[in-house]
Image (cartoon, rainbow, N blue to C red; front, side):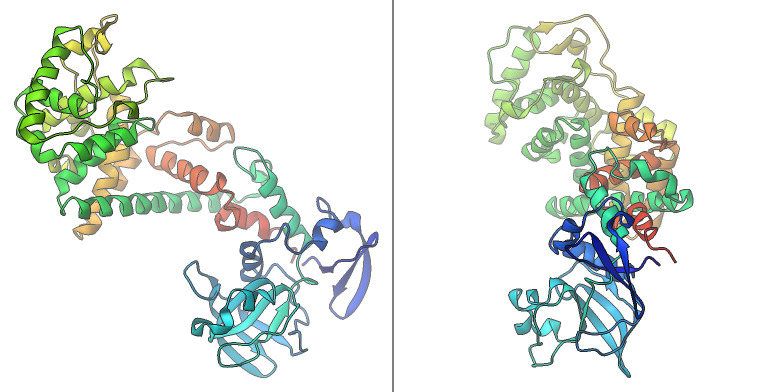
Length: 470
């Protein structure tokens, strides 16, 4: 392992290799300057220090507390993100005594008191205080003096340099230049885990929606389909529309195409102007009567976005297609969740907007005739972003493992979505061969790379651990 380092303001850095001291030139710590290492608050954060401790990225030899007692770390503990001490399940031998409990990590010892831990009984089970710099003795609520280990002289400089490089990178993937150092098998396993993580995160949203809608599976899928019809740009306005127009009300008019579209376009706020064409004028008349009958209030029209998008994806066209799906399903949305034949499922979703939209993308604006059919890309988008999450979540709610398995199976069968994000992954050599892998890569980018959560990422973990030479 690389010798831990004690920092000085001279042109040399003094290191401890066991009980022996030697002098190492600054150039032996590439990518990081002594001035950076001297500042304990940068590039450190507690999250990095926790990771260094949990991963043992420090010099272990002759480890002692600040009072001189020998320390043997049997288990450093596991980082936990809930309230309370930073790591749980630790086992350390201090002198001749074996301790089991929690570990608390701070940049400086005095932060124990600054954070009020001396008054908190939740910290009574802390067996070791791990700090970057020791500047004060601290005690627990019961007055016990905490044994403290200072890591300042023992942290691998290469680990700090690597972390700093990842944090400063402006690349699509912070570690893009280092991918040749990563084990492909570990990366593959991580991407499989990310798929489950993404589905679990979406499940939390679906479960909350399910409870909000009175534990109604059909209404839940209706809301999920509405969001998916909006694509990324208009997902929120479509969600607003679904809340403004309950499924039970729509189903009363599922055999009447004019009233179905009148309700959807009216509640979307898109019928509040004086239209020229006969069809939107008819919709407007129907909506006025229905709104009075059911005490409806339209959502703000300003919520909808038309700019910088293909006309076929305009919200007007998507609402018209949504109306056809509502009538085709006849209120039996749950039948979509029972369909395990991908070909038949696509067929159910491949709807054609009403005749008016053949030569229109917006009201009162004629265009070249083109049938507004929800094609393969559109149906697959609905399956990936509405049916699969609903299937997975409802399967967990209802205790049906077959539904969760069917959700995973659909993602494995479907091709990946076509978007710029997956194109950028392909440029780095991460080619999605299925929707399952595509969802994993989207999760990696959105939840880890974009947020610089390299310490929580298996790829970043592996790179940081490689900085320690056994």
